[in-house]
Length: 100
Picture (cartoon, rainbow, N blue to C red):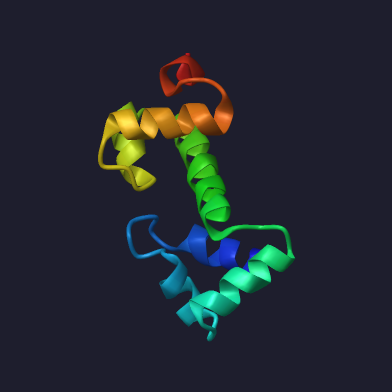
């Protein structure tokens, strides 16, 4: 189930469209069933979504000349400060430190 969710999240734009209800509907189940299946596997939807965002952000840092704000927008953050906090939480370093 986690692998299916990851595939959907990776192929979806990471904007508001990729929420628990939307992904559950794509898998032909209720959001409650999806949540229960993920918990049985030791996963959480938000954790999977954050992992996809983190991986995409790191990939964008390594492959492009985008600004921090542009990378933040590309992974679903409208505020650069919010993206910076999330990135530091995910990786242990701030985005500006990571790119250097």
